[in-house]
Figure 1 (cartoon, rainbow, N blue to C red):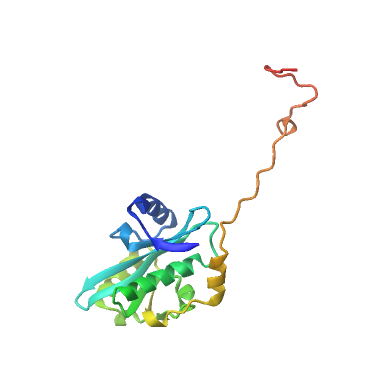
Figure 2: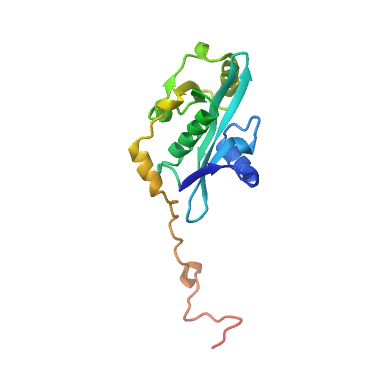
Length: 192
């Protein structure tokens, strides 16, 4: 399992999953996303985005649209997507990163802390209001200083061995399931 930058060819896949999960696709640009990929099957398992906002306070970095696909939950996929996003933000010169989400309990394990709405940069105050109206009524502003991000070891280990949950095998159907007695039935193309 690894996390890579999204490519142009990932755009349709991202938009399909963002819509299916009810995530924020405002000002969509595939180059803002990272994608978690299973090395063995090349299956995409999760994704997330950095969104940079420009305002009177300068540029502000937000993590948004973080999603993990069914079958990949609880394996550290989301954690590694968040880690890659925070690392990317730090590499781009951001000292801290914000997230506006109702999944605030999840983010606290990495060092994110709650922020009062009035303490947000103005551009994020407007974004929070818009997000609460359209996507996530319970969104809470969170913030982390990029150098304070910490990956819990249990999530790092889960990610190393992550594998897509395999669906239960379908039971094999027999002639009896359809009310056919295989000893008495004749078939149009019987070769015996």
